[in-house]
Every structure is written in C-alpha cells, then in structure tokens.
Length: 271
Image (cartoon, rainbow, N blue to C red):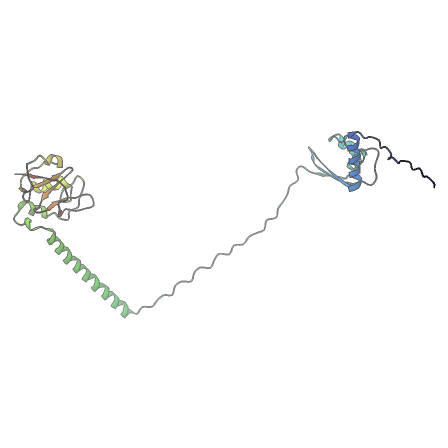
C-alpha cells in the first residue's frame, strides 16, 4: 500500500492597500465600468457642462483637465477621472442669454342674450273693463276705511267727555303726533299737551311734568274726577274717568284715549 503525502495549500498573500490608495483604485474602476462621466463647472462668465467617454486609461491629465484644475481642485481624483474630465467637450452659455415663451391667444365668446318675453296683447275693451273694476274696488276700500275710522274715533272717545270742558278741548287733538318738546297742535309731548289744553281754559301750568306734579292738590283715585291730571314719574296725562286717560304717549304715537297703564299714579286736581 502506497502512502500519499499531501501538502497544504495557502492563498497568495496580497499586498496591503492604504485607505487613500483603495479609494483611488475604486474611483478608477467606477470610471472604467460605467464609461461616462460628466462634470458641471460653474464659473463667473457662464455655465460649463462637460460630457465625455473614457476609452482607455491615461497616465497623465490632458491640457483641458489642467485648465479646469485652475478653477476646481481635481488633484484628489484618480488619473482615469482626470483624463475623463479633460476629454469632455466644453459648452458655455452666455450670461445675457434670455428665455422666451410663446403666449397663445385666448378667445372669449360672450353668452347669448336671453330672449325677450312674449308681449301679451290686451284688447281695448278688456283694458277699460279692468280700469273700471280697479276704480270701483278703490272707491269701495276708501269708503270702508273712512267709515271704520269714524267708528273707531267715536268708540275711542269715552262718554265722560260730554259736558267736561277739559276733556272736550283735549279730544279735539286726538291723532296729533307726538313731538319731543312740542307744545302746539303741530305736535305735542306729554306736558306740552296738558299745559296747552289747560291754557284754553285760562289756567297756566308749568312746562315740565315734574313741575306739574305740584301744580294742584293731590286726591285719591276714588275722589278723582275726569279732567284731573294723572302723574307718574316722567309722564303726565289727563284723567278721562273709569280706567281711561288721554295723553301724548311717546315718539311714533299720537294723542289718544287709552287705559291707565301706570301701577300707582298720582291724581292732581287743578283749580
């Protein structure tokens, strides 16, 4: 039996690479593998774009690469990368170059106008009939309104007015508008109205409601008579008997007979 002797095999020891040498080798391999490199160099006179194809490795950078090196530091590149930069064609763009955009015109078409509504023809006889009907209706409405107003006015004047000199004079001014500071039939405020009515009977009253409060003798509600003054803070009126009074209420209202709304009025008899 033959004994074979096998010797151990060992891999060949590689040379150690420094970090910078490994980086340079890797950059050179990338240039060779991809075949194309581009360099864009911005300088003060314009824009430089370079495109090139690496055909074969070069040992030294050509003149163009050396010129670029004056502007950009390419010393850290491998010889293959420097050769690619140097072989790339140079394109320059003028700093005064202008871009132009063609503008297209837009045409706007307005919407069509609406068609006019058809005109209805009305015969002359029908028009006259309508006019007569409207005139009759208007006359009837006016007559009804007048009758209603007269009825309302009569109903608004209490029975106690008859034979009472103060209330008879006061009732003449029903419907006169309230006017702040007014003291004539053109317009009254509350104290202007009472002083004007009493003046017709020769009795002079102070101008304001607060002064008229002390112009006579205070009586109880049970003793009050139609024609007496009826006072509450800030307002004065004339007592009309029962639960009624006549006064100039407030802006927007007119002289009228109405129910006593004050909770605790003062009755004053002026003689």
